[in-house]
Length: 152
Image 1: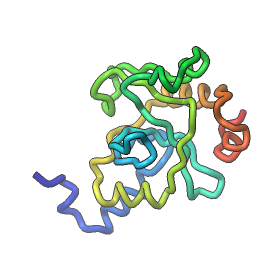
Image 2: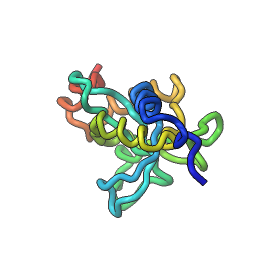
Image 3: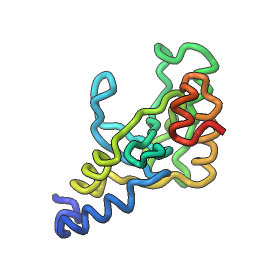
């Protein structure tokens, strides 16, 4: 079965992608920067001052105890239940310990190719909590936070 969006003209799909690549969007896509590379859910948290790059955070099924060994880094993983979060299939963790940078053009391309990759939007309250947690993270450089307006 093909996605409903396949029947629309490419101009409409491109317009959809441009409108929806924005802060708070939740996207599911194959990402090569995980071990092993796989399809992941991630949240668009902030756009760089040049408007060409987004800072994103992963949504994970669990906290990897082999990577996040101390309590401080584990606290940077926000537990999210599925209630009122249509983009989650099961309880998960938002990893606010690092920012993963993604080109805006890549994000628009993947949404333009398949609009079903946009799986939801984070609520205002959740988004405020995510940004507050990122701002407190000692694992993210001050310059990266400043570049994305996440310092103060």
